[in-house]
Length: 245
Image (cartoon, rainbow, N blue to C red; front, top):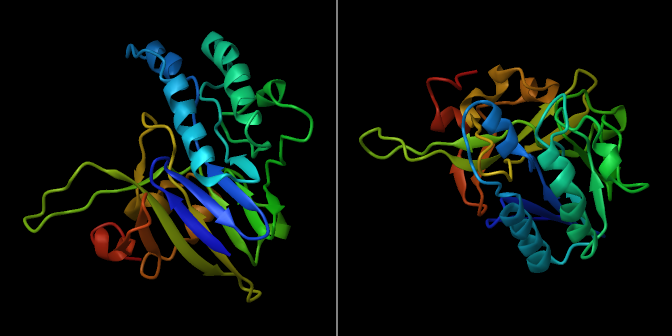
């Protein structure tokens, strides 16, 4: 198995017998959600979709896997989402088959999908790798494998020599956990694709309570990578005040 970090996403290409392009947390329609909070931003959905298409054209995958929170607004579906999602998804389909693991923002997402595109909420095995959004307990069949999940929007702030932090950057966090039965699973938390979605520092993911698998992170032995695949350390070394467990 080979993992390729696509910096222009951030996105991940999982290459085995199949080539699976993983895009997490698109949050299409986020602008209408921000508008309800008094923040007015012109829709960036088309630009966001073009970035996805650029990743597809760069990697030429067999499958585009949208790893949950394809849409943003809950519990409603906004006019923006009704207007934009059908044509954006169709633009993806014209290039590659798609599949969607539903996220906590994806209520009613099935109305925008074709038969066979919606995967179970507990995740799915594709080419021996487990995929799920990350807000629910994974299906038992995923354990003992590499599990790739979104939902947590991991970011990392790198410090300079005087302790000043740069702007938080999207990050991948890799960790291994072992169940009492001795089964070892590998976890890869992938960053949000949406540039407006914000994030949680890698040193705070375990305590965030966002999903059951985040509680399984081993801060001392976990590994953190930037969007281009650059290894930057463990949460324990990057955030010693928060990741001391």
